[in-house]
Amino acid sequence: MRMVVSELVMLVAVLLLVAYFTMVERKVLGYGQLRKGPNKSLFMGLGQPLLDGVKLMMKSFVSLKNSDSGIYLYFPMLVFGVMMCLWVLSLSLFGMKGFPYFVYVFLLFVGFMVVVDFMLSVYSGSKFGAIGAMRGLAQMVSYEILMGLIVILVFMEGYCFEPNSMGLAVYHFPVLIIWWVVCVVESNRAPMDFMEGESELVSGFNVEYGSVLFAMLFLGEYGIMALYSVLSVYLFFSIEMSGLVVFMSLSLMMMFLWWRLTYPRYRYDLLMNMSWCVFLPVVLIIFISSTIMISL
Picture 1: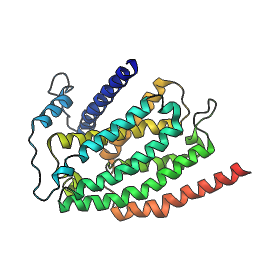
Picture 2: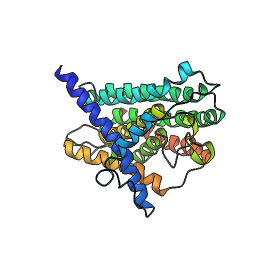
Picture 3: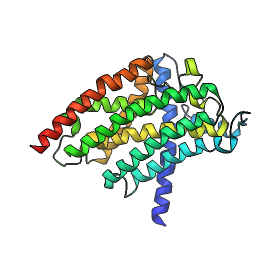
Picture 4: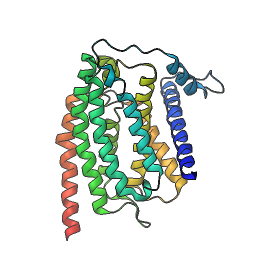
C-alpha cells in the first residue's frame, strides 16, 4: 500500500512538473522576445497552468465526419498513458536502479510512439494531419536508429554508473551532441518540429484535436521532454548526488526552450541528410572503433 501511495505522489509531482514546464516555456519565450509571459493569475502567473487545464476541460470537442471516432478518440489517451508508464518505470525499483532493463522498455515505447503518432492522423480523416504524420514518420524512424546505436555504445563501453568515471560525455563529446539533437527531433520540438509545423501544417498531426484530448497530447509531449533530460544525465554523466542530477536535468529541459527561442526551423531535406549522411557515419565510426578497442 505504501508503494502505491508513493507512486501516486510521484505521478502527481510529474504532472505538476509538466504543467509548470509549459508556464516556464511561455515565460522564457516572452522575455526572449522582450515581453512578459503570463504574470496576472495568482502570484506572478503561477496559477496559469492550472487555469489553462480547467479551460481545456471545459471546452467542447467536435468529432470529424470522416474520422473513425471509435479509435480516433483513444490515441491521445494512449500517448498520455505511455508517458506516465515511462515515468512510473523510471521512478520505481525497476527504473534507474535496473537501468539496462529500463532502457530496453524505453526504446520499445519510443518505437511504439511512432506508430501511435502515425495512427493519430490516419484515423482523424484529415489530409493535413496525414501530411504531418508522413513527414514525422520518416523523421522519427531515421533518428531512432541513431538513438539505439548510441544506447548500445553506452552499455558496450560501460562508462556510465562507474563511481570513479567522468562519464561518456568526456570520452565521446560528439556522441553527446548527436544524442541531444536526436532527443530534440524525437520530441518534435523546434527547430525540428516537422510533425507540428504550424506555418505550413497548422499544427500537423494533432490539428483536429481539442479540449481534453489536446491537453493529453501535449502533456505527453512535455513529459517525454522531461524524461529525455533525466535519461541524458544518467546515460552520459556518472553523478551520484541526487541534487546535482536534478539540477542538470532541469538545465537540459531549459535547453529545449533555448533552442526553440534561438534557432529557426531547419529544412526537412537537410534534417534527413544530417541523419543519414553526417550523424550515422560518425556514430558508426565511433561504434566500430570502440568495438575494436574493447576486443583488443
